[in-house]
Image (cartoon, rainbow, N blue to C red; front, side, top):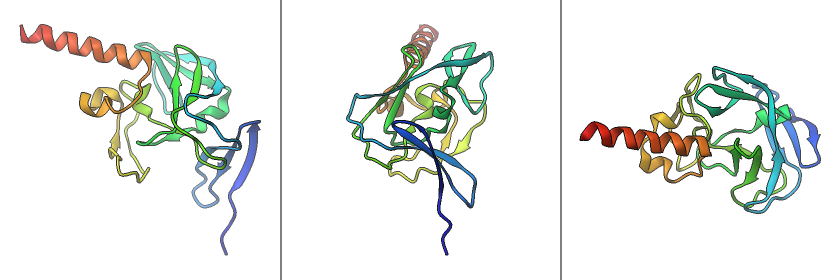
Length: 167
């Protein structure tokens, strides 16, 4: 006998589902989204100077706890369907998202060096294995993803610094 997932509606467009065996939670769409469509606005419930596993990085010294907090249940995938842009406070669809589909984002798209690395379990063909943040990935891999304004700036700074070191 299989135990059903527990689900809790948290917004007109989403519900949190909890796995009965592991207790892990995920956010799922209850409506369809098209590419580029706004999913949710967000802000900072709290601003921290160091990252933790629930924060989204906005600068070198700012990491925000999300408001609304149910957005923290958007888990990582190496083939994400949503994008967080902290500078705009906006979550958007990267591709068509079907009803009941789990909402996922690419953590290194907002995180330079994460509080704790983890082994990805997304099982996608593009799975990168260990996820640690954008600082730990080569430019050719990062080029495949939409990245936050902050991460794009960090990559430009890193490129500029390495060119200066060569001279």
